[in-house]
Length: 333
Image (tube, rainbow, N blue to C red):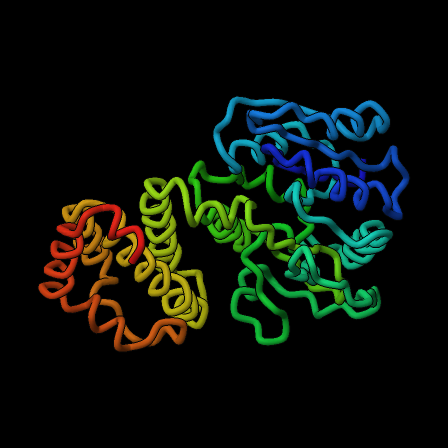
C-alpha cells in the first residue's frame, strides 16, 4: 500500500466530512491508500463519520479510551500499512488531486520526508487559487539541516510533512503522551533520523482556525497539563542541544527560538495558574539546566519582560501578590 492517512478524532461531527471529502478526492487509486480514523473516546455519536465508513472501504474506524492526541496518533501508526504516513486533523482539509503526485516526486528523489505548504485560514476566508508546482522541489538535505534552513520555511506541525513509515519504525519513534507541543517533541526526535529531506512548492494543507478546535480550547481548559508538557519539551530540547553531533548553528537556533521562548511561556503560565511553589520549582529546574536566567536574544519576547522574569525576588513577590487576589478577579486579568 502506498499511503496511510491518520486522523485523530474527538467530537468533530460537524467538520469530519470536509476532511474526508478532500482525502477521497485524490490522484491515488482507492486500493492504494487507507484513511485511519482513531476516535479518542468521543462523547457524541459520530453519525457523519459512520456514513463515510459505510460507503468507502478505504476508511477504517477505531475507537480508544480518551487519552489525548498522542495516543490516538500512535494507535493509528500501529495500524498503518502504507509506505508513507500523513497526519491530518479532523477539522481541517487538504487540496484535492495532489497527494499522489507529491509521493511520486518523493519516490523519484528517494526521499524519506517531504514538506508541503500549509495555509492558515479562518472559516470565513475565501480561498485563493492554490499553488501547485510539482516541479519546484528544493535540494535534498538531511533532516537536521532543515531546522535552520533559510531556503525552506520551517513548520512544527506534523501535517506539513509526508513521512516514510520505515524511518518511523526503524527508529522506534512515537508521539510522547503529553497534552501540548506533541508535534514539536516528535519532530525533534524524527529530524536527526532523516537522511534525505526536501520541500515541494504545493499547497496541501488548510489549517482552519476554528474557535472550538483543540488548539484554541487548550488556551481555556486543561491548564494543569500545560506546565508538565512544556517542562518535558524543554528537557528534551536540552538533551538534544547537548548532542555533540548536532551542528552548533542548530543548537543556537533551538536555544534562542525554542528553549528561551518556551521557558518564558512556562514561567509566565505557572505564575498565573499554579501555586507560588510551582513557580519557584520551575525556576529551580530551569536553573539546573542552565537556562535560567533567560537571555534576551529571543526576538519574540521583549527584553523588558525577560528582565522582569529574571529578577527572581521581584518575580516571586509579584507572584505571591497575584495569588492573594481572589480567583474570580485573577481570571479577568
